[in-house]
Image (cartoon, rainbow, N blue to C red; front, side):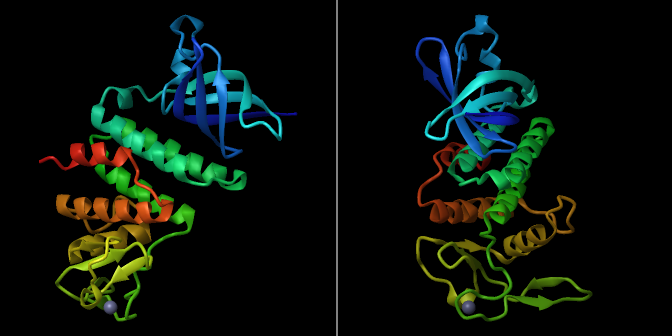
Length: 263
Ligand SMILES: [Zn+2]
């Protein structure tokens, strides 16, 4: 039996017996774990706040190689991101991030990268005005961690050029008509190769240009500012991309989409 001490972010909670909860949490050091938190449903036990979604706890747990769940020995609340909990749109975003993390296979050795990404993203979301751009940055970084970054250099179908040099060193889209992100082929189709299959989503040249720049720099201060429409197109394209990769729909996306693009 091993005893492990680490921090973890609660991704999922389930009622268990009368007063307990089963927590699924992403640890910094050991991948995802699940275990019973005694008194997780009881306010009097003082443990209810530690069984909330998206809180960061310090865990001490023991683990047997054959057991499905760990045994939580100690659990201390470290951070609960209060502003996040008071805003419905932010909760929808956090739900979506959690669902993505629940879908990912996270080996223990890569745990910290996933943990840091989620922790930083929740912290940003907690203080930001809106989550729309934070979500896009999260998705880009997750694509990198999973090693499934789309190929944006040449057309994935004909290998033709997608970009042309403009004044200075900036690349701009070669065509003025829509391209596609094709999840099946893992990259961009040039306008000549666009096809009507369910894993290909149209992207206007402006959305593609922003996608490439943010993908390359991963800094929110990039030179190209996204329009509402850029982010909306990319939302759909990346949704389809993840759906293809995971082989299933992300349930939390429907509500998030409805809430983000209603205007
Ligand atoms: Zn092509």
